[in-house]
Image (cartoon, rainbow, N blue to C red):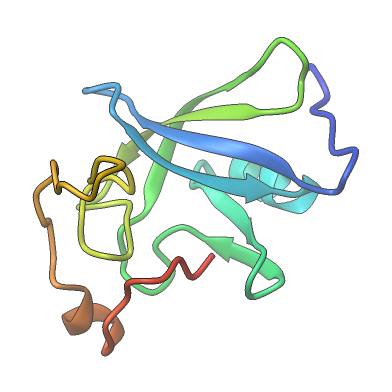
Length: 126
């Protein structure tokens, strides 16, 4: 197994849909998150804002079932190819990349975040 370079303690982790190949999100992993992901088959990340390990979908139920993990040429970024339940983005969109740089929304809402989280969620909470 190729060992990822956790030089700064964290490594970027991109989640991509296994069927559509749509990029769903970017998060970060530490060694524990990668170990938990490998052990359980469910995506785990390190939350920089909460400063702790978190399982994707722990609040929403929108888990990511990991089908494959790839590593880039420098071993400093991983790609998780996943089956995504409902949506990846906490704002209610399937992908976190639901808008263009000029603000045009190009994605569709998959769920109402207020119904799940009980609050408006515009800011990234990772």
